[in-house]
Length: 419
Ligand code: PGA
Ligand code: ZN
Image 1 (cartoon, rainbow, N blue to C red):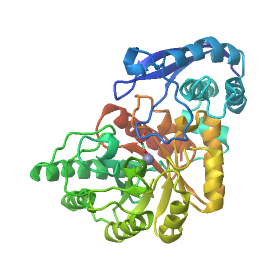
Image 2: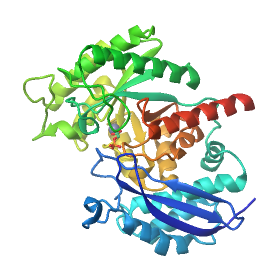
Image 3: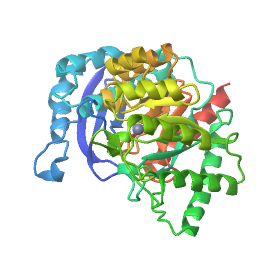
Image 4: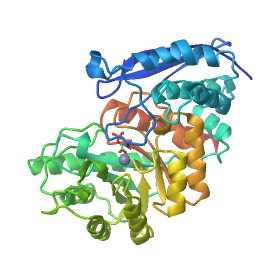
């Protein structure tokens, strides 16, 4: 059934960090409506599409009233009357209306809020679950399973109040486990980790993404304590579960070197790669994300040629879900995986395009949330709809993270019931 966009209405709400973000409602001519809100990063890549903030005295300059106004007064009237099933046409209409390369005119936050709402409205109009609509609309093979989660059990860097340089320490269940089983394993290890940290007298408050934020002697200690928790919970590292890392290296890249607490002096790119090699051997990491600075292309090429056969080298700040940067990365062999974040590029269609380019070149595409989230669970449906092997939605606490996991529980039940 076709349905047309009747009204688009946007407002400023708060994200999980208590900072303003955009929420947009799309009302159809059939009377149905949907609501979508956009996430926001803390350790953002320089090359991301522009998140429009007010820059005035209110909300420390972080208000999004200008973005909201752009939806209400410019984008909304422009897309009114369009067939909601025409996701690509609507996204392209917004890209043209904006007229800039990085969506700095209308704001990627304004545009994405409409793009996601349109996608949800398309599902509503077709009367199918969102994940299935995304699968058909994007031309993906229908998923027979829910993606395996990267649980971010320890939050360091800009996401935690502890003293760790690396941003995310991931626990990754084996891909042959169901999501229900993966979630149980994740929770049991997370709770054991809490006990381990408590015993060591390390802070166990949680960071932006719902993982613990301990003070430890070194970054390696974070893996040690995770290993302890895995064993205490009765699981076997290297078969039941694996580890992964998001270094977010931009944040400890100073004057051309990498400054981490594990080493007394700053590391060159080559030394950093050697450090990852030892980490990989010791903890069998199955992925390393943003291991190097976002514009250290040469370093990334070396990192991938040295370690890319043993682990997935994921570009987040390096590639920013951007087709041009991804194509450059592919031609240089600068990584073999991409982190996919819709708000880095600003429309659902361009996000799907990036996933397809990555996969057509044999790369892994990991679907991700941001550190600033809302309770919107679009990204959970999106990972299933795009038939991803892995997804990344944070640690195992905080409502906005758990909302995604809870949505995946329901989706898995539906997939099983339909098969
Ligand atoms: P961000 O962090 O949302 O703060 O950018 C997430 C990530 O780096 O993967
Ligand atoms: Zn990252």
